[in-house]
Amino acid sequence: MKLSNKYINNIPLLALIVANTIPLWGVLYLGWDVFYILLLYWAENIAVGFYNILKIAFLKVPRPIDHLGKLFIIPFFVVHFGGFMAGHGFFILLLFKRTEGPSIQGNEWPCFLVFIQLLLGVIRQAYSIIPANMKYALAALFASHGISFIYNYLLKREFALSKAESLMGEPYIRVIIMHIAILTGGLLSASIGQPIGVLLVLVFLKIIIDVKLHLREHRKKHKLKHLQQA
Image (cartoon, rainbow, N blue to C red):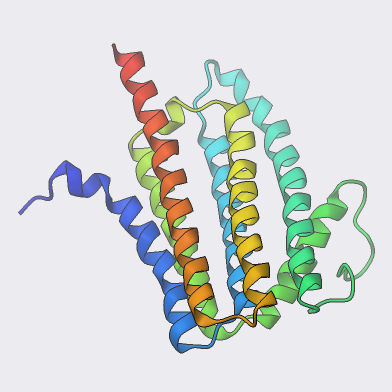
């Protein structure tokens, strides 16, 4: 029996919701505290940046020669977003006293590449701290963004509707909105002793924000597609 288009269209959203429910299990049964929840959501944003690089790489351009512009755009995004994520990750580690300073192994990388070196140092430190079961949660979140990328961006041809300048800014919008809401809730939870109820509210808040951002992004692309076809 064939699935209707309605159910197929909802697969990326369902994958996003399912992946986001895993932290509920972690809070209820695995003892994850607010630090682990914040670190998990920070790590998810690295997945967002990774798939954004792929979006830029697969972006449809008017002329073949315009692909050369990606040789500048992609490295610029990697360095800029990498530094942005390094700062966020270091702030979370420092806030919960899990680090004493930026982690750089070996010689300092030249010029702006030092931001990537800092990000790799924060990733190494974060990965060494999180419990093994949280790595499965991170893999699920990473996979959910991959499903959305394959289905919406490639199969639904959003790559033909997107613009490079929009793709450059989209991850920052998500990170800023998410971190203001989640970090505020996380600090509140930590200040009152991290009651499980507040942690659950924090997870549900993240799910709601994720769903709204997902629907808004793809609804906008869907309307644009219909306008171009009209």
